[in-house]
Length: 395
Ligand SMILES: *Cc1c(COP(=O)(O)O)cnc(C)c1O
Image 1 (cartoon, rainbow, N blue to C red):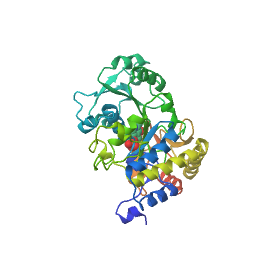
Image 2 (image 1 turned 60 degrees about the horizontal axis):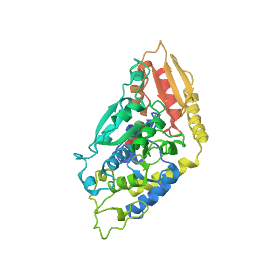
Image 3 (image 1 turned 180 degrees about the vertical axis):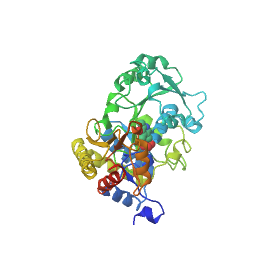
Image 4 (image 1 turned 90 degrees about the vertical axis):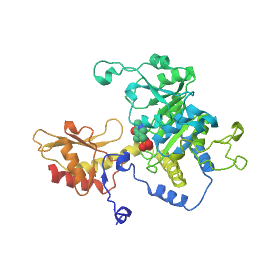
């Protein structure tokens, strides 16, 4: 009986991947053990984040970094850092940004649901470019000169959502941001693997980069990384940490928070509600170490073997083609319904979800009869169970 059963909740088979809705990644035993140990001692949270900063700096090439409660929290903290800098008065005022730099520039085609995390800092988003290529009406998207033209004395940051399809390129956007001395905040939540992407955006000229900890890194589901320049990270962590202490008693680690540069102690900041526990920080750091220790090829091979197992457990289906897909990114297993199929793609997704065991899949192409299975969060026994269920439904 799992802990979930004993609490009155059921477990699912997660063939959707590391999506938050279906609880992200599975934790390696080494990560769970580290989290358990972390819970058996107390620490000073600023000192723990300073230790995290050194490890994250080494992994990303950034000057500093902190563990956040997810990439979205990193976007809020990063935006708040760009608005408030090291001024405790501004930190205390957020999300009231009247009179402050309160505009964030984004390419229109990169707008997405996580923008809420940016707007929560009190800024409003200035959209740039007409994404013709997304509409199918043309070939163009935003261009660097349009981003440059949108910069005003109110611009707090440029936000870039990293994806292989994102335009302009990160290098082009960084050139504009760096030349105008506007901080560039990158949402790289799901850009791992390859592991080289941990360093890629900082190397290209980004000032802050947010990653998810609960996706490919394999950290606790509610974890993330925000890395970047020393001052911006100092601002972000000041707005995240619990600040319930007197100025004279407060002696934060100078490597992360240089007290001598502050006129006073800010109160709990806008990121205090995105608190991360010691177990989360330790779990993320151990997961990051494991992620870096495995090269991309072995990670790929490990995923591919799960997918192949799923392919052989499924066998051949009536009125559906099966395929092991390896091109671009992580391997996946694809079921494509053929003309004779009695069920639509979405009907199959729903039936898998409502069956026993409940199987969650990638429905993004269900309208075309294509059902995707990701190996990222599968347990070793899952491929056999999925194959059995697929044969029952459409075999
Ligand atoms: C997953 C994701 C996020 C949110 O990450 P969390 O770690 O769940 O907060 C933000 N942006 C993008 C592009 C994502 O894919």
